[in-house]
Length: 485
Image (cartoon, rainbow, N blue to C red):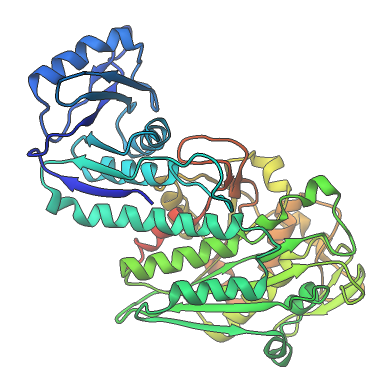
């Protein structure tokens, strides 16, 4: 990742970036105020350049100006829009891509914590790349200095932004990794390595034998078709004095063929991303530990490969979940809810938290309803839903609260089991959420479900997003968790 440091006005940079804002209706753009005044000569030159640069001040607009023999020798103008945190985040990402051939740049930053946090996250997330080969050009940009009035006063903000970006990058890495490498045991090993040496973090990994002994029938059924057995990772952050206990559950299907109800090839080619929920909750928990957030977090990631073989579970099978509830599955491609049901039932029965939140790349219906950028949020608790949505929005992610329509409950009825897990009727994302609700027990009014299949992956470059895994949920969860202490 980029090395980013805070510097005061005593520095004389070789490459300086100045922020530009729109000037208002029918008015030209203007240089934005910055925490450290820029030299009058540089500011006057930048102001004179604005009309020729054809910048509007809109977010992400970037222009470079050469100044041979002068200091700085390169002047960059960067559109920051309204100058709020989301705009600085998008502007930072655009700059990281535009200035990739520079080795070091200095950015004159507007005053305030929000601007700094947005800029740092944008720089780090916009410069993210995932490649399994060293071939091809690599960005030269290695260091960014942020010109501020009081570096010491903003050190904690820089640290929080860096931690957030690092954990988002970890979730992206885990999700982008091909499934030829990534399987349940591998994922569990990555969590163990990332958690090693961090105080107050505790890890337990259950393998197939323990899962069978303890009755995790959903995880075993879904993972039964693979030669690489399932796992249940339990990662516990226990800071002293925490008054609130949150359980986060993340769907961890490390590859999804659809099982015997096999997917068509176009729908299968990106199924390495079907564990993005697990990646997000693990990364958020590691981030909470790094930031020492004063809230207890237990993260559960049920991990399995949904493969086709002679030992795969069949359409029409009845599965006994943790705690005893049974479900009839007539579509083995509706597997995510089966592993989540086990983990949620375990959380309710054994962990007894104050709040229960699950994240899952659960349904294609999420994208049909809300498009590619929004997750669907389901909850019967207005305060919980409002808090989560506020955290997600503050972090620059997107979600929309959806209804838990009671009229769809009839579709969950089964003639031979307690529940039908894969009915073909009703709104797909809503019905999946209603199925999960049946495993929340007395936490029903303190539970939220986030169907984040659509925003977990980006097909293009936009703002701080790059092509591939987005790490959706890490930033929003960290913002929300920080409010619970």
